[in-house]
Image (cartoon, rainbow, N blue to C red; front, side):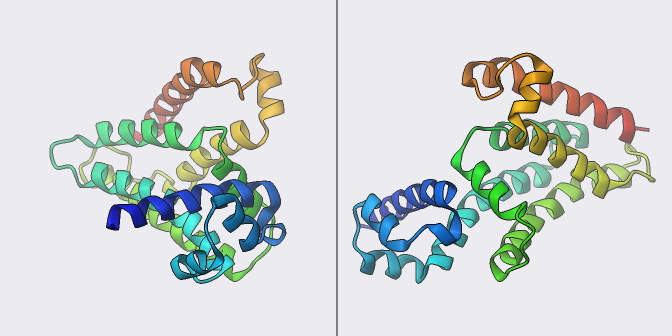
Length: 209
């Protein structure tokens, strides 16, 4: 029974993610989402309480899954800090450089410039992941492997900005690279390995003593 509840919630969240990415928060309705998910309004309200609760649950599911990955990487005692950095970049590129509804949705909300309770809560969720990543750099500094004067915040901004340009300005990136970055075969087979190699080389050239 519990597994059935989890599966049902995940199904609702999958549908909500797609509908919100297509219509935005204001344009989407819980009635539309419940109809497309094949559940009644009472069930949707029972699980999420409101449209805002459902919207935040979509973000929390994706952001929390990546936070779990980061925490596992950061807490490993048998992994060197340089290997942790490599693992973070691999996971970040795999999860974030994708042609998904969630990336469209997160760009829609964060780039809107609106300062609402929802954007504040989303920012708070994402900052937990930023803190987990910062710990990797702080560990490298403490061990004397990374330069003590590195600008950790600007490093993270650089990584995020690279992803944003590829995902959110795909037409420009496609022209620059001479290939459609929305082509899944190209994205998985060529572009992601290229991004990973570039980020690792760039960061290590800057941060390693």
